[in-house]
Image 1: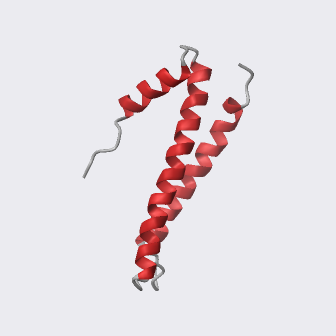
Image 2: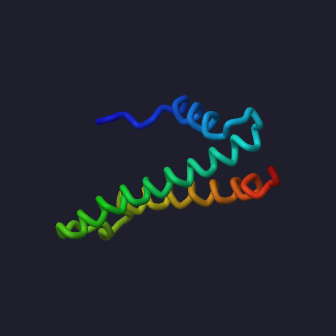
Length: 93
């Protein structure tokens, strides 16, 4: 499996994209980067869930499934991200 970008690679990318050493500006860029990664992650998982459903695989069995657990974790992480990113995204430059 191709490894995902390392945390350090993402940090370096955010610093470069921010173009400044200002931590609030870097946080805004990091939040935007995380949002883009979130969209990509959601699309990736959705693609494979759709394939499972197309093949007749049951993703909602009689008990809690792995899909349910992963969905719950993803929703919790998304809510936490949304809660903490908003105050920083709307600060004046």
